[in-house]
Length: 380
Image 1 (cartoon, rainbow, N blue to C red):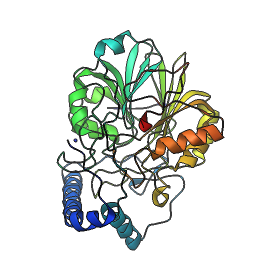
Image 2: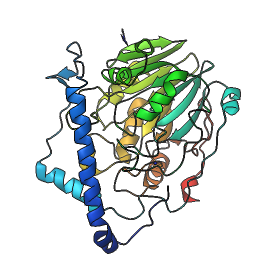
Image 3: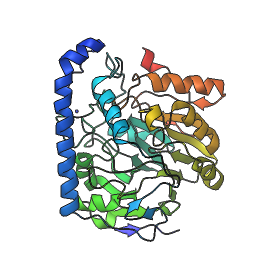
């Protein structure tokens, strides 16, 4: 391993009283099972697979990675209230009542597409075609974003293409290790057709433990860059956190990414709250043709690590990009807002700020040098 240098039928909605009566015991059990799974994952990660340390990183302090700006600590009571609302007080509409439109993809379509094309596979999984090769971000193909496939947030739609059907992948780009961005099963299936994996510090070590050959993995700290076949990839700051169990919190780094080819420059936000770093990223590495920005799974109580829609818009303006492409929405139920709210809010904000925004369907190709607005497919 090298370091850088410079998952079925959807539940029908219920009224609040029906949910309280019918689902409270089931969700309480589900919560306890989830905690047990996380505890087991955390303990196994602590005693069987000790994570490396990175004393040379400015972000690594006290055996954990830190954001530049610390958040106010959440009290036990506040944390309990958050969990209680998420489990017992979910509003209706967080899951679509109908099938989401998905444009199926084939390997031949990807191979025949011109350079500078992009396809969204769901959530934050994107396929870019750059310099004749394919780059894949945060690939999640499993039915559930969870440690287990019998419990946890379930996909609203199938991926537009299977891992088996994908052409050879030049690079997999990972932003952090949360289950909705780092899919163990997908990595195991993908590794044989992927040439390079680039990750923030610590995440690469996880891939190696999963069986990815160390020579395929490159870990980068913030502002470090690697050039792969004429595309420069820079790990840029983000304001988030990491962890896959109860004992490995913030033991691996998180980041956003900038990808620069001779023809286009792209920003991929990963997961992040709003912070001053967006302006610096734009000044140092912009301007950007397209910014792929987290717009979903938000809540005022966790806006330190996930942006509200107005903050996504401000971050986009700070970056100085030409087109906004909203991601991190439309695939999993991860918050309290309705599933279509991210699309409605960001398109309204784009209109108010005279910002060009593209909202393609899952699997629909977009020319990154000349995007089109797409349509309001979530209203159909």
